[in-house]
Every structure is written in C-alpha cells, then in structure tokens.
Length: 113
Image (tube, rainbow, N blue to C red; front, side, top):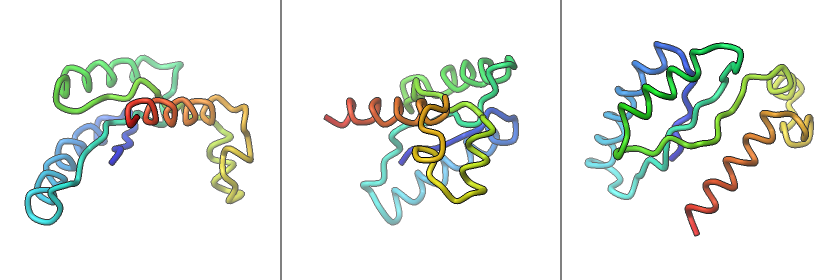
C-alpha cells in the first residue's frame, strides 16, 4: 500500500490515525497488509510547505515507514485530466506530474526486484 498525502497540516494529523488503522487491520484481518511508503502529492514547489512537511515526515517516520523520493507536484493538467476523464499519461505525457508518477513507478519497481 502506498499512502498518498498532500502537504497540509490536517493531512499530516490524519496520517497518524490512518497508520494506526492500518496496523489494526493488519493485526485483525490481514497480516500480510504492508505499507510500501508515503508519497507526497499535490506539492507546490513555490512554497516552503512541501519542504517543511517532507522534513517532518522524514523525522517522524525515519526507519519505520519509507518516504518516497518521488514527489508529485500540483499542476493544472492533473485537474484537467480528471475533469476530462483521461489518464494523465495520455492527456499530458510530458507534464511534470506525469513524469513524477513515472519516476515513482520506477522507484517502486527497483525496490520490488
């Protein structure tokens, strides 16, 4: 399981609760359920918030849960592709968010092999 989180205070607060819920599900229903890592999404590179949240995540979960190096930026094309019901890969293959998703796929594939 990849946990996608946007760099906002309420999302960070909810992340702790979500991880506790995953642990309960693992212990009661599915002992094979694993968290592959945390993925930051909807990051705005023009602000310091993404950097600060990334640092906080790393400090909080270092050695416990992986923080993916790939960070998905917030772009207009992502919203447009959702609106037009088209995969981002087809709608805007050269968009920086699409490239970030490709990087994530490569990152996961490297680790799975």
